[in-house]
Image (tube, rainbow, N blue to C red; front, side, top):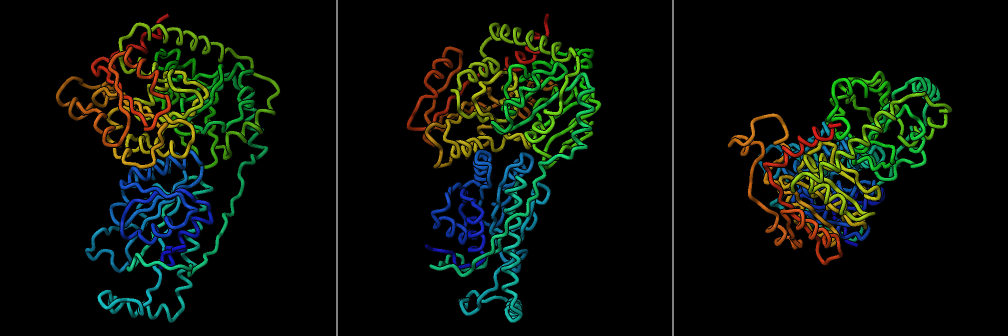
Amino acid sequence: MTYPKIPLAQTVIQLCKAKNIKHIIISPGSRNAPLTIGFTNDPFFKCYSIVDERCAAFFALGIAQQIKAPTAVVCTSGSALLNYYPAIAEAFYSDIPLVVLSADRPKHLIGIGDGQTINQKNVFKNHILYSANLKLDLKDEKNVPLHEELPIMKNIENKLERFLGLQKGIQDYNEVEINTAINLAKFKNGPVHINIPFDEPLYETVSELSVTPEVVEFNFKDNNGIDNHILRDCYEDWTAASKKMILVGANHPNEIDKALLSEFYKDESVIVFTETTSNLHKKSFFPSIDQIIAPLSEDEQKQLQPDILLTFGGLIVSKKIKALLRKYKPKEHWHIDQKKANDTFFSLTKHIETSAQQFLESFLPMISHYKKSDYKSIWTKVKQDRLKKHEQYLNEIPFCDFSVFDTVLKSIPSNTVLQLGNSSAIRYAQLFTINKTIEVYCNRGTSGIDGSTSTAIGCAVANEKQTTFITGDLSFLYDSNALWNNYIPDNFRIIVVNNQGGGIFRILPGHKNTENFDTYFETNHQLTAEHLCKMYNFEYVSASEKNQLTDQLSLFFEDSDTPKLLEVFTPKNLNDEILLEYFKFIKQR
């Protein structure tokens, strides 16, 4: 085995190994050389080299999302670190464990004009579970070449510290900080930052370890248990209410026992709205929320207003349900989550600090009778009417974004993974029923378009199932460095819906078809993915009308020697009109 000579690098690497962090995503640099040497020379780790730090961090996020365990990203000092920030924010709001290992210069070399140097301490403080700012190992002056002599004051400082035996204190401090950070990432599910100062020389290696850090396990208290008085309060309010709405955001597949969900079928006073990313499927549920909400009159919205709103899962995509529940607030809003409860509808009354699975297991057996109500029957009839109009509308419209999503979503093979881009892609997907065997994911922590492709590729690397990524043209082009990646599986598929700009902005209020709108909002362009596919060895196909699309999809998901990309060109001046007319059409009696 070959190890970095620097004890601090050895300490970080050994503790990552002890805590089973296997996936290490490394961006090239010099200051992080001790870490790179250590990780890449140990066969325990699966190392990836990705040049663009923003892509690297989202790639790591995609892996962590799938394995439900921390991945680590490693970078050099300076602005390289700042490129991790979008993915860190996404991990923070999506509860995904990510360990950021940033190399740094020694304290005495910061703020003196050296290159690749910024103030890295606590740089992510608003979006991080923990920032560990490690201490520099003491320098052994016997091995310092003459041209690398330290400043006089630094030499005196080192001698005094050595005299006082503080190297052990530094080692102990660093071990505590590293243990704390990684433990929090693992058990609190979120990003942590470990900032690691290294002095030169950086590339020296040894054949034996000089330190054996202590592995400290997290003193994690299981908070899944629910106080009986909380359950009793919930029971009394729940059984008295005649209108109960359950709203489910993003969930991992199979996170909730399907048998528990069946209990809601029996209760006529309960309706269950599920987002596309909830990965929950029951015939009695309401999966296309906007399909129900968007066409409602004021009186109908008021009629839908629940007495109790029960929410769990990640952040909510549907703006329609947010607007309705903010205007017609529930009397009570309970949110189930082990970490946090967002007051999304400005009516939060209970934060039940447990998992949804544990709550349902404890709560549902208490319910022995159901409140008589026509709440579910009324809205089930609305759902059935909407679905009929939905199919009728699809048969009447020309080729457009709307019809493309219908065709594409129906074509995705069973038992595969679907990653959705942000903006229009996730919103169109919410209007359709998706095959219940397909696992659905989307970066909805911050809802940015910046790393969707990179995340999807990380997901594909970590998951043996075929992964399909559906995205818009701006999102795809924005994150095109994601394809600069040597690890993309041959069964990875990308579908780019190219409407020559940010088509979602045409749906929003404002003056359209002006030079100002085209340039600064829609950002009209004539770019395609074809040349990127040639450069990155993707098989490229395209379609610009329905029969072409159907023909391409018939072969698109078959086995191949390279990943594939299908680019679908749609008419940008029709898409917004067809979508807006859809909500009017499905309201008709």
